[in-house]
Image 1 (cartoon, rainbow, N blue to C red):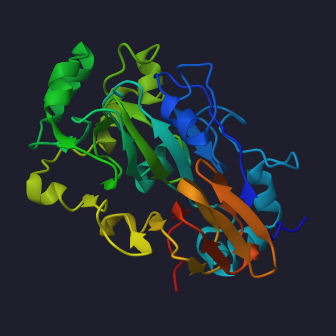
Image 2: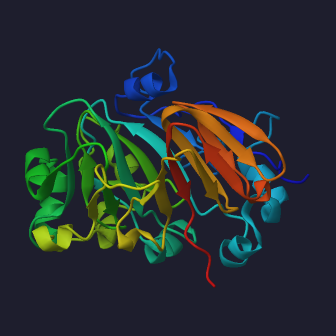
Image 3: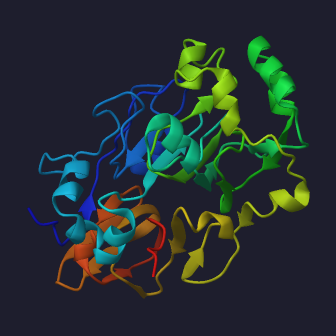
Length: 342
């Protein structure tokens, strides 16, 4: 079955999580929520939760999993150049993440570690686009402030010394428009009240240093590897202010109808830009995930399709939709896979 030539609006897809949140997602979407543990909305997901067959996958309106639809017609969904570089993988996972409490200190493996230990072609680099905060002192935590001994870290893990773990990290104040690239291996946590659009490599590999009061047991934290092995994937180096600045951008005041949101180091993994048409903006053909943050407008395709848009909408755009035109007083985040090799 060929990929539909039109963008597809998607409902919320919120697999259960171990931490609180979700109110900001519900407010953005104009919905109500009946659970305090719906803090992640997996948008256009072809990725499952670790250890699950289907949890986390996006189901299309016609009843198919998006994963299966893409595999059935990778050229239509992704385009020939993408398929040459990434086969039938979308090479992207997008989430809306609303931290109703501080997340635990954790990290993710890189591609080499994931190949060796999880039989996966890719690990899990990620990036955060801050789209909302609920306090003036909203904070994220990223990278050790100074090079830290593996023995010290192992002791923190054994004793579950959360204050020591957190104080060892850089505390970074954030506001809407700030973006943070999190390379694989970098220890990090998102603070309470921070709402982000999150781009990731399409896996669910999280290695959690601070598991007590969050996860049921340490086996869940190290994904069955044991902490001695898991710590091989951890970046224990120090990130001073200058080095940290290579991960962070402040885009809230940047002018322009198209604003490139992420730090240069994120480009091999994913792309994201903010689109503000005035009155219209042309977009090249590409597989993409769109998140409408503000306003109302229209997404038109070169084949004559017209998709109304409003705040809170999320859409998956197949390559086969061709060139697009975005019009209206809108603010849209466009998330895309990395640029295929030339």
